[in-house]
Image (cartoon, rainbow, N blue to C red):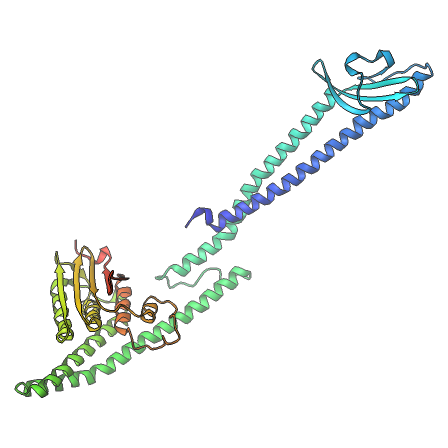
Length: 416
């Protein structure tokens, strides 16, 4: 899972961004408050001192200033403080910060000077405390956000792990919770139970139908063998008998495969099966479909691949791919290759219809006419066998026309 896209990370980041927004708002409020206090404590104080001192100076009365405050009038104003704009302002004289109120009365200009060093120190302390507090809030928001995210995400992860655990027969967690997670867990449990019941019904139905078909198929095969034997010298009768016998044997093989697929993979033995002879046998069955067409079948088998799986399953999967290629290829070639852990069947036919391809890979059919369950059933059986074995079936278009099927076996099924 991409950590940058994980739900836990996004919850933590959202919590942190909320904390940043709150800190910025608080910092703005604190700055406005500090500046307001400065105006209130310094600027208004200087104005009130000037309003008191100026009339007393005009009346030649003593002007006693509070500590740190100086009142200059007329020629007594230092050269560095002359010519200032009326109002309160900050000035630096000889490296010392001053708050200065410049004004004019009936006898001339005056300035009230207040050393701002003490207030600036207080202001620095206040801003430092605010900055430290905001930093602590951000750190705390990360810690608290991760804690809340874990508390929020862990039940989801626990439920997801239980749902993905295919071998687990235990009930899902959180079923007793009265919150939204409990509702989700109960919905998953109900849906899983429904799917399990459907799969069990389908497995029993497949097994029952296959068992029921075995008896009539055995009778048909027996009768076809007798007909083929007794009409050996009569080509016009022997050919149909052979076709009946081949079709019945194919149906019997299909029934055997369906019975195997109706069982769990762990309950089926997996003997070592060599593919070279199996592919040659299935290719010979495919040649019958190409005997009246300009189609050649080429086998390219390197090392004899040994697969731990039932021969019936492998024969049906590879045989259906070969027969499908032979049946729909009108001219050109059918090539069967064994390379590494893969078996490739390549043809020069018209390709797979989009509707069949969509059903093969559990996609939405592109047209409304894709409801026919008959077309592509051989490929669907191949896909089912691959899923049963844990193999991978890939389909690509052949350059110049045709189809390429690649059956990849997992490493644990291959004899090293």
